[in-house]
Length: 521
Image 1 (cartoon, rainbow, N blue to C red):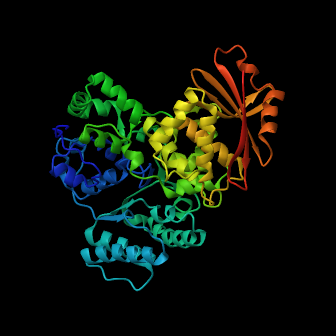
Image 2: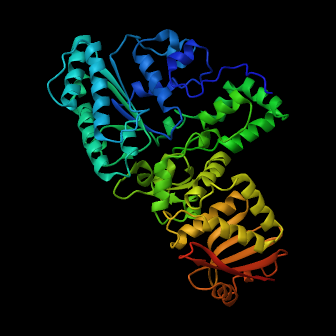
Image 3: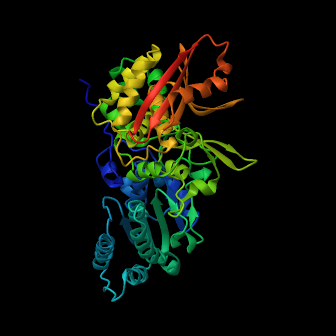
């Protein structure tokens, strides 16, 4: 049994005050407050879930409420700041579903009523936007200070309802009216800071408030959320030592393992590698490695969008795009690359300054393995199988060249596919097989180009090269003949590995593999 860690780790804790009062470990991010104070009046920060956005926002709240004792020993305590209390409105959209418009109405009424009562402001006889405008103005005049408005997950009601176009539009219009006060009430505002996953380009908080500063991809804010390697080595010395002892490893080896599993996020052109903070805190608290972030939930939106869109998963994992593509989501034309980036499954890996193109990839092993494990059930049903045993058996069969055993198991897997999945679309079958082979830890390519054409699926092990051709409602003979006719095996003619060609016919009526033929060279 692992020993109780010597350090208190604030897993899931988003209250800066609780963390500081109860001596939890805190990685000092307060230097960014100084940069914010010397910059714009309006800010937006986009980051994936569980990356520290809410904690940073709560840190701002405590700062503007003048709670200096909480900042003792931190960078903010050295700043030239009067530490007077400012009126702070904290609008937190977390922890609710907003599956109908009245849910948002109830929430906004609770928010406004709380601050109207707190500051003794008479409730305006108008809509929510009018009440908010009056609240901002009168609280500022009453206190003699500009108000601070902090909005956590401003887009949560929208993200939860992207599948429902009509409800999305209603919620967007209502929120846009509320947020329009940020511009019209500017003389009474000290700071507005919003966080969220995505910047919705058509939402008037961005189209109307044209001076909002989106710091999501700005180099100077690269480390505002997450944990850099420098911060890891400085703040988690005890945790690294305990984790190394618990796993019979060296400290250097432990840091290397942490990097492989949880590091690798970049949110701008020039950025240090950033670790996922949720995963790190859980690892050190338990003294055990696991896929903590990915196991905490995969957004339904992501799964549904990938199933709905005829996309090539292999291409998605190494996508290239512009900053405009990454910065926002458009409900009328949902870009799966932007969705994967904003939800944390893809991150920036390179930047071509000449063409202004970002190269994307998966950040680390936790995300890579977790993404594949959670996405595969979207294409094939796994409820009858133990995924780990299934993966083990598939891997052994391919490594040992037991093609018929492998194909029978694959046939059984596809035969249990939900009717909701469009298995008549070749891309979905290819994606399912691509995910499976990646989970096996094998080298796999979909639509592999040769001089004579494209191999549907190419898989390589240390002993075998598998060339697979898929046909739909035709015949395995035709698929195998195409492999032979187009000399798909030629690039591996002098390879020491055995080449195995597999012609596969998929029956859309039976929704599974109908037949296959194998030729070995």
